[in-house]
Structures are given as C-alpha cells and as structure tokens.
Image 1 (cartoon, rainbow, N blue to C red):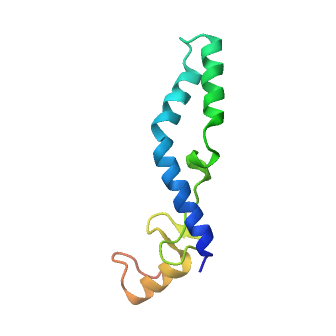
Image 2: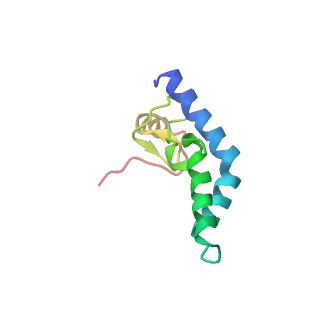
Length: 101
C-alpha cells in the first residue's frame, strides 16, 4: 500500500492539470505560432513557465486504483500487477486467462 500522502499528492496534481489545461494549451499554441512576433511568443513562453509545475500533465503518476502502487501498473486495468494477477486467478477479469503452452 502506498503512502496516503503520495496518493493525495497525485490527486492534487490531477486537479491542477484539469484546472490549467485550457490556459496551458492556449499558451503552448501561441509559443509555436509562426504568425506572432518574437516578442509575443517570448511573452507567452514566460507566462507558460510561471504556471504551477504540477499543472503539467507529465508530472502525474499512474497508480493502482486499489493499492496506490506507482510501478507495475497496467493501463488497460488501472491496477498494479499483483492485483491484476489476483483478479485473473479468481476469474473476476472477463476475457483474461492464464497463459499455458
């Protein structure tokens, strides 16, 4: 089980990403727009840099929905590898079976 503080930190980051998504997208669009002058593009880049760091989507961490484990998480299920294995062994994950050959 992951520390509660780490899980809470990721939840906080996800809220910030959602809050600043439109503003960040607009500033990024202005930074790469060749139609704008260099001064306007630099100003947009400075505004982008002043946004909170945690509002960047790449700072988020994919965690297991049950345990909060940060590593070994399957995107398809949103669960850690150990929990996926437990669910598959119990037969709770439809369409998944243990490989044998």
